[in-house]
Image (cartoon, rainbow, N blue to C red; front, side, top):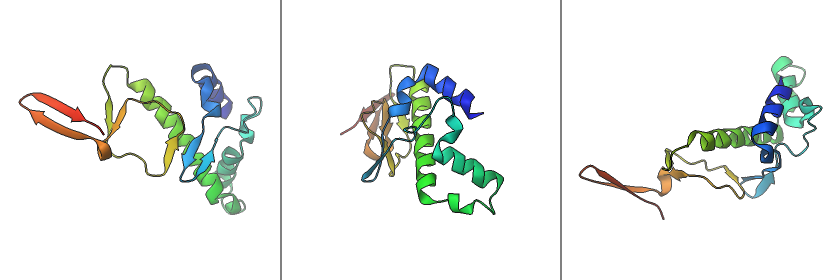
Length: 130
């Protein structure tokens, strides 16, 4: 039930509902229209369930706006999870950074392999980022 997820997110990451995701030149706030009393009414969640349970009659809901917004919400959730997993005082190195999404005003300890240079000297690994 999405209500359980929303309540859990609200308890742990209350700022998640106002986070802006940049998708190329556009900004999306996936949870902008969230009514915590009726979370199933998020347009992209409703469309996802309608397509999942009635693909033939609800195929028009499988459109680009719903897909991009749902993927932006998923990206946001994954980034919060990644941030939670990094508990040590060292960066996590992401194999490949996304080329589609970015979170506005987001602080992370992740280093992108796209922008990271590493050098091994003996048993010491030196990590340099621009």
